[in-house]
Length: 419
Image 1 (cartoon, one colour):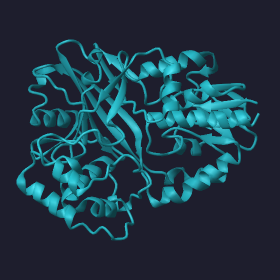
Image 2 (tube, rainbow, N blue to C red; image 1 turned 45 degrees about the horizontal axis):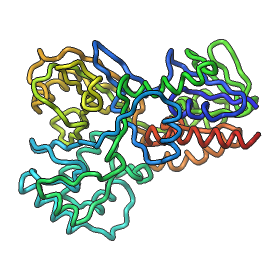
Image 3 (tube, rainbow, N blue to C red; image 1 turned 30 degrees about the vertical axis):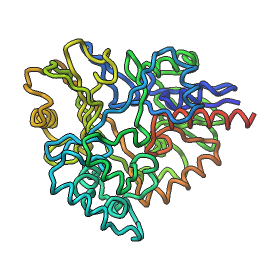
Image 4 (cartoon, rainbow, N blue to C red; image 1 turned 90 degrees about the horizontal axis):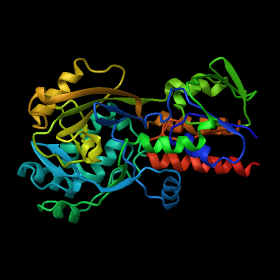
């Protein structure tokens, strides 16, 4: 039984490592990984972009460790929010120590007076009911508006899951003390390779199935009735097809009625500027959320804190993430650098050694009513034709690297059972 896997990221490679029958993997790029690639520039290691491994499932962790040689560090998260010229702990709703008194008062009173029993119809409603008007105004609304670039009242709730921790009045009061509330949320700890960035894990997976992976193999068309994949100037028949490429792009190249849905799937893209710069002072923060509109980026992170091998001795590194819809903002690099100087992270432009931009198309899938309406139909039609979706972009979802690995394993097991 022949299986074709489109895409050699974590989902595709995990599936390939678990398939027992004949298969091949088609990867459009010259090396595997998808957005889990790493670029090493003048001694600085930059991922696309802050790719940190959060492991909650023991079976997935065991599978990863059995298939890699790379040394993994387990690191306790050091993440913060920067607003009102103050760094506060993450999550914001549990760490208000250090904020101006007026902001603390708004957050506390808003939480106490929140409309808990109001019928929640969308993400905006949920924020107000869960956290109240103060936390909404001072963090949740501005941060998520910067991230999603989409009306919050049009976002549904199915994407959230473990990604936004709830709080209690006791948590909020505890968070007014100097010692921050930590170890909360799915990302309280993360794993990261000692050397080579996140792509080092991809390379370890890839080595085990290298003979089955065809690189530079761009899929141009899929005939789901005849079960033929057309790539480059070749064609290949299959019995089962695993799709980890962008679902939106996949729908464009199939001969089926559901293909018309491709332009109804929405996503927000991300521009990430990676910077290597001279170390003036020690930075030990892993990443920081930036809600205020006066700064162009919604989040910054410091790769040199994930591993000392991510930057040369005496230098720091940072990535700044800016989301956009159709067009990258004009003069974006200058705006990012100026904002980092305003924050005091960069002291002088002359300290910059490396600038390396990255563009992540469709980085964040938009969960709106249209997605919820058409996605079940898409999945049902594809599975009826032995086509299975896996990974963040294949399933068109908001998920983690662990999720992608787990989904690849599960689909492989499903196909193995079919005989």
